[in-house]
Image (cartoon, rainbow, N blue to C red):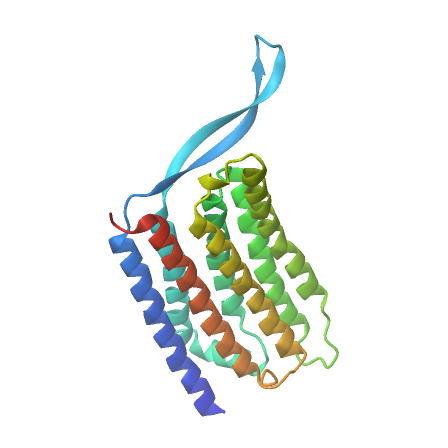
Length: 255
């Protein structure tokens, strides 16, 4: 068992360097592609004597920095886990929980969904904040799932169900934007690579839920919590890499 923990320590270190290398590469090679962040508010139209919504651009965000950010957040988490937090990490794993994972996902996965939303045409600050918050809640429900079910034979699935509900809403919102573009004859305004991002990252996000489901159903080889931990780590790297390089190829590569 001790060797398994040592292997996980090495695994986390390797993953930290892989995330760091990718984040640094994206940061160094990205172009200046930017998207706006807007806010919408009611304003009185003195001519028509009605209240009407007005959209105002607050600022623009450089996409390369945000893409690098979710990779570098993961890199930092892996390095912290494999060094200063390692003893706590090992103790938590022995109890069937990894608190650090869920806090890291609450930031990195939430940022990922915001970027996908922006590529789909969602620029409203309030909408993006709600999407970020819902995915953060989804991941914190994963933390609650592990906290509430430590040492219990009968699994309480409430946190899992609530997390799935919270997590699916941002995807529905993005799908509505795709649908609106389609019915209004402007689907060509959404690049093809964004559709591929939607499908691929949606499948990856659901793979995390499936991994947890198999853990708590104790399906072989998920009976061993450490196996599920390795799967989480691999899924995290694969999902983040897939999103980063699809965005890079579609918008950030130097011309």
